[in-house]
Length: 162
Image (cartoon, rainbow, N blue to C red; front, side, top):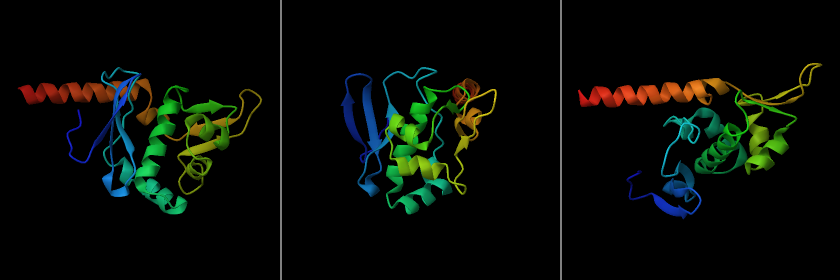
């Protein structure tokens, strides 16, 4: 459980507790959801994600706080994690992705911009439909990435006990 005097808590009857932070921006950002963590109910989020250059650029470009951009990123990736195993969303465009994930359209469009490049539009071919594709999806979001992260955490706990 997050221990911070700056964190706010909000009860969520369906899943347990939502814990929020980012007091500097006066906005709430999603850090942890749920009382139980299952293999398919979490995302690998690096601690430096809110400060990645791409998100800082998006914050400046969209005129919103980094907390807002991080929250939108998290909502988008959380939604996508339940929709795709390989990072490809068939028949989708930036507007549909934004609507489905509950984020502003200009955010998903900016993610697909050439200088950010975390989301790509893929044209249809004869064998597959067009859609949107997340860059490096398997590196961070596939089952193998989650298993690697869990294995690393388990090994770290084992080393700390020894």
